[in-house]
Image (cartoon, rainbow over all chains, first blue to last red; front, side, top):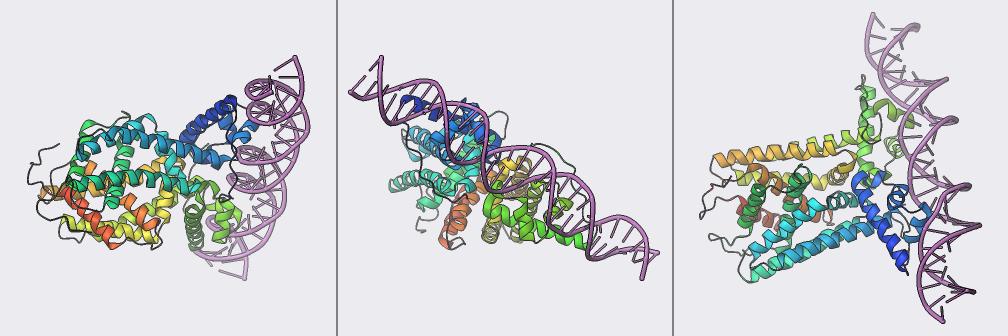
Length: 211
Length: 211
DNA sequence: GGCTAACATGAAAGGTGATTCATGTTTCGC
DNA sequence: GCGAAACATGAATCACCTTTCATGTTAGCC
């Protein structure tokens, strides 16, 4: 049942249709984020969106399709935020700082991201994988370039990207999502940066000849 | 509905009861891990366990209760595996190696851990938090002690613990769960260790006078 | 070996929620 | 302004699931 493929609904052809679809997406994001996928019913989504139950099926084939769409949307937005922030940095370490700052800021403003991505594991493993893969490939490319410039030590960019991404994810969960303040405390941020700096810094003692 | 408290069922008083309960727990673990919480029905669990539907309610008050129990059980086991592995290590770096090895090995053998913990976010946020907090406090204590012995640089053990935990989590997801091989490739493991080493190593350049 | 509490059973009650569809309403090109 | 396509509606259908309960069965204890 959860593995079936369905042909997606065609995109809306009029402004009205587009508006309704957007309203449904926004409502779905809210509902998924607050009550979770299991308890998120189509009725709830349509009620929040202010449209009739049947309207939902004009725009989406079912719960999974709209979920996927929500995930893709959030993923796109967070990646865009991160790359926009880090692209202007003069060097890699600065890029790390700005990238992480943007990530934590996005998390603070859209807690839905975490809450939704974590559920995607079952609802839709493919979209979840794509999300991480996408973030990662951008990240790894940045690391690779920096390595070429000798700014960081020689290491496998992919492994490093996943590891750092994981560090950011849990730190964000712990200090942004779980703390009332809703934003990362500066000392925690600095600590994280210190760790990343240490992990990436060119080692004076050993050469970078690891695989 | 998902926030209600119910008085837990009393523990079984006979070997037979204990056996049935254990069978249900094991079945629940499998079902939650394969089809996910939303699609996991009590019927499915009891069928897999080979008991009648009604029997379930002799031992558990509902789906959430057995889910919580499964999470607590997995959490206990993985923590035990990790601490057993790392406790014999001569120094901190060695302890890191053994701890992570044990973690990846456990992940390979019980993919259910990941799959289930990630769902806990909504089903049961408290248990999920407890799981991470528990792992973390042990980890942080180890780092703190090592810091006292001067084996690693001065840093906030809690932040470091969460960051490293996150790194391990995503690396495990990517290379243990998502890869056919089902165990972490040695080069990836070494890369991760190199990163951790860099992150924790006492810095020759700066002193450890950060918070 | 018989008594009782503990345990197991599965049919049935009662809900919930996803999805369909026949029917209206709006919008847009002409 | 008109006709057709796009869109919106919500009552009705249907599938499935949780939970209860009255009734059997088992096992520990004397």
